[in-house]
Length: 70
Image (cartoon, rainbow, N blue to C red; front, side, top):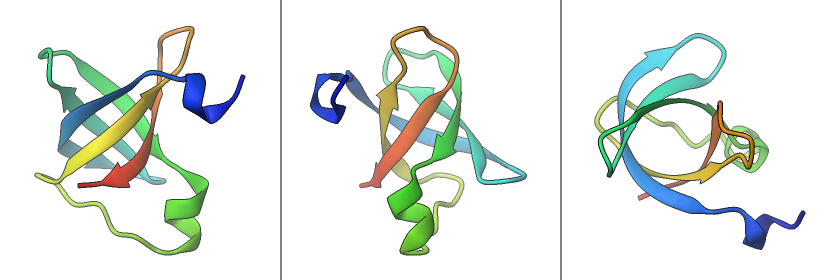
């Protein structure tokens, strides 16, 4: 599965957890546990509580991946 095939949604970070995990409230009102993408870790892009982020959803549910800070 390529990166372009994964659905993406916009959300707001509501809580920062250890090991670059975050709780994000999506546009539809659901809360999801997310982690930081590798490129964002490599380039040391900081994500803080209150930031608007783009999240890639996994096809099986569960966690999402933060790919961009808006």
